[in-house]
Length: 112
Image (tube, rainbow, N blue to C red; front, side, top):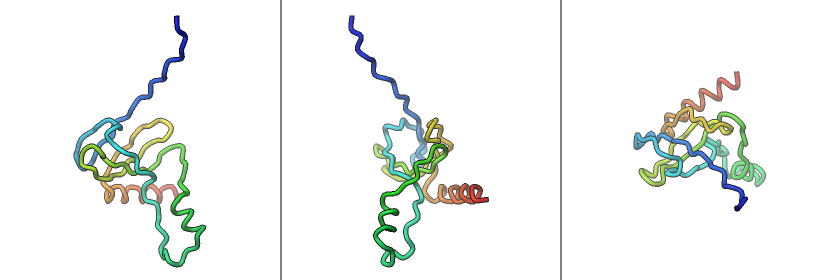
């Protein structure tokens, strides 16, 4: 009798594409990174360290996080998702314009 370890099962989560209007398995989508990263205001005036921070440094939040996703097997459009990074719970998904307004409201609440 073989006692080889069994592969652990990883549950997928559903994402709702606000463009297609469909909830689909996450395998239909590609993660596109952290959403709403502020680009330097005057790109020609910043030093290499500032560019390095902009290009490579990302928050590694445990908790609610705003992400970009692309619906790669259907409409191919980008949208934003607010997802809990520890539980994979999805609070919602929005177009970039709709999501930006909600993101800014979240940031204002956190700052207060």
